[in-house]
Length: 225
Image (cartoon, rainbow, N blue to C red; front, side, top):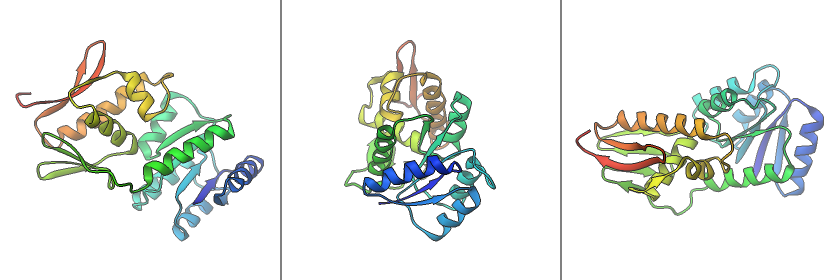
């Protein structure tokens, strides 16, 4: 597995790179955004580890650029910026996960393994429910003749709901499945469920995602809505 690490602090980059190589990964390192883009153009990576506060081209701009190119390589943001606004902005720009500094190397490895598992084209059947079809390979949601792309987090929420259709899911359930934690994620869960709901509503007049007051959310077809 070949990874790209984009980190301007050379000591931090060296520590991470050496550790990953000891775990059997092949690692390229860039110390600024310009070089990071050059490497992404020239190589294919299994995952990208991206610091946000890097020179030349900052992390969010780099992420926006590669997504505009159609590069769907999983991206793990690693940064000291940890406000909810920063987290949402990073995820909404196209990152697949977010790890704030300082972090343990064991947690970094776990996040990388999770990203790589999700990106593999495993033998998973398309998930569906009453007119909705979710393609796990392309992360596209289909309804009738329309379709829309989902971000990684939107896809995971949709996947969880389809696996538990017509059952109430708490915000805690969703946070554990999508973000692997429940701490301070309630607002982010609501934000991303709302993103997903709007994408579904752009495809069909039917209402599928409903809020269950005091409990969470449920995926249930409502033809009259």
